[in-house]
Amino acid sequence: MSTIKFSEKIRIDCSAVRAFDYTQDYGQRLVWDTFLKRADLIGGAQAAALGVKAYCVAKNGLGMETEYVSFSRPKVTAVKMTKGPYMFKSFLGSWNFKELGEEMTDVVFLYSYELRFPFNLVTPFIKKKLRSDVRQRLVDLKTSLETK
Image 1 (cartoon, rainbow, N blue to C red):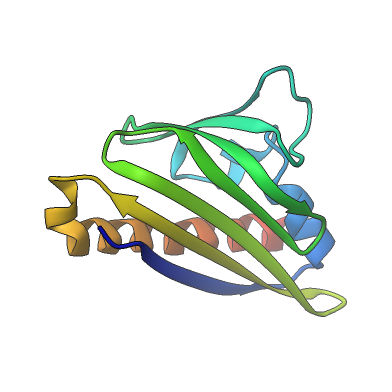
Image 2: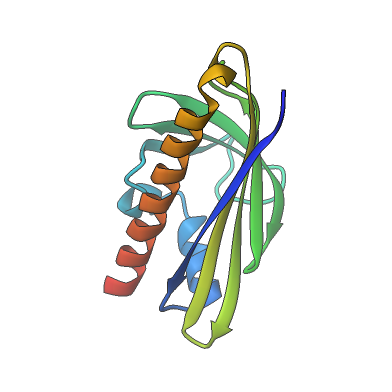
């Protein structure tokens, strides 16, 4: 099975620090992230950080436990799946924040995953759906940050 990767980017009128902090604040996550219906840090964690685990549930009901494998404020954060839907053999997601000016940041989501059989037979459909979801999440993030 091959690894599937894609990335999506959006430019937001705010600082990288503000975008990073807002996206990693689980108290604010459901305010902007309309893809999710639940987003919690687990294991007693009070804030996102390297080694912290989170549990998120999409509006379609699929849940995933992830662990932060990178956390470098305000530039990059990445999580890997530790438990999740059977369809994923592996899953890694990263967020990169590139400050272009005092109040201008490019936010890039990168997904990398492997699908188990028989889900790999519909890889193009799953990739198209995930990519569409990521695009919408970025638009929602931009809207939320630029209207506050």
